[in-house]
Picture 1 (tube, rainbow, N blue to C red):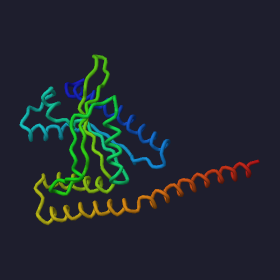
Picture 2: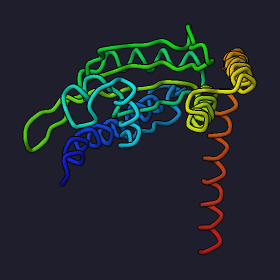
Picture 3: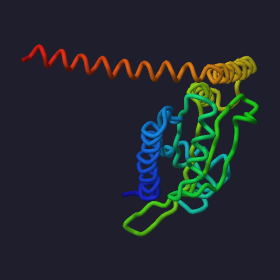
Picture 4: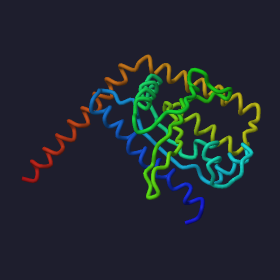
Length: 223
């Protein structure tokens, strides 16, 4: 195993474990209350090319080290997607209360978005990973955002690679306009939240009833 593989292995373990735990949060919400603020969870370890770019940007050596781990705290990253803007606060509070990780930093890019239009809530947590060599505390960035915010951020990220961060003025203006449109969509959906959730409950119940009826029909036909 190479030095980078050894260095990144605990990060991969942290991401795998947090995927299970955060998805478990979603399941608990769904069981205990009518609305689960977590829509879905994803996670990844930064590819080496991205780590190299970040190290170059920060002026630090591109080599596995404690300094690199400290100055690039998003090598391990999780994303939590929510349906509504209000759900983000509920998820943030749940993460703050957890005993299996420690929140070390929070950045609210929702109430105060970036100039580009980017919106998301970022948390850096320290998560202890148990290895054969003992416990290693891994920094993990958790981004919490709505589906609309995530759609915009994904497009902006792709364009950023194409233009290396130097967007043509027209693209920059259109991206800012699209970010505002995405946030307006979130705000409008929040205004009819009760109706949306009632429709979703009805749809879930209807699907369950349909399955039950199909199962009974199938059983009846085979007897």
